[in-house]
Length: 167
Image (cartoon, rainbow, N blue to C red):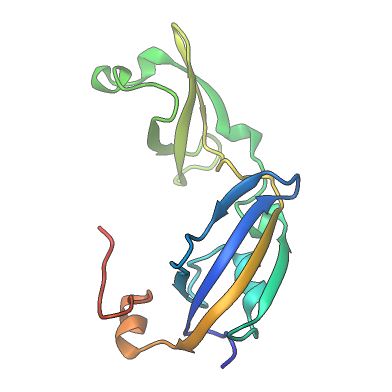
């Protein structure tokens, strides 16, 4: 069966940046499973896998625009520490994340990550760590099957042996 909309795909993958920096991989014996055609994986990889079948090996280069988006300099901000509520100020350290409105696009919310905390200022970025980077995927497709009605109604794959929700 070919990969297409509403198929459940199991795959092993490795991903690195175009510069060769390792990003992520599936765990040995635990393929990643997703519902194809529903935006659950980055668009460029979904496009590269369409039409492939079980047993196929796929090498795909995905540009930043089709991965985690272009790097947006407007999302790298220096924020005055006293703009944060007092209870949050105690939590401000590199890696701390918070939702806030996009600085130039009203109504659009962004997940910001704190990078540096100085005495009076906090340096944050709303860019995904992989924004602006092209990614190289190596994929081995383990299995392709039609999604069940229940999986389609829930909008995601259900694991082997029944129904699993991640909380």
